[in-house]
Image (tube, rainbow, N blue to C red):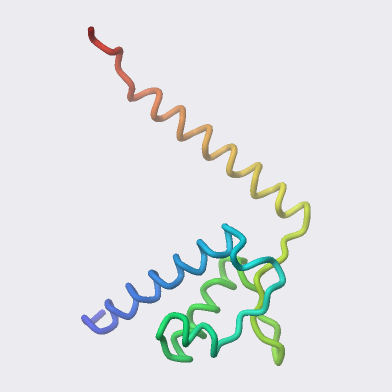
Length: 108
């Protein structure tokens, strides 16, 4: 990967994180249409870059791409949402266990 590709990858990651944050904080609500032109303008990026971004978001199930209609913020079913929360609880529990194992008694 050359320097230009690395920079483009970093830029894509930065924009991805911003859009991801907007989705999880409900600034972009489920079912909301994401217009390519608006994303180009908001982030100062090209249409090709926006398409890569939307593909990546769709790959992670954050956006639904509908041919000839556009991109929309995903609307998970109740079961999908429950699975996400169940998985998150398992991950967080394991993280707490690992942190607790690394703790040492406090000295006075």
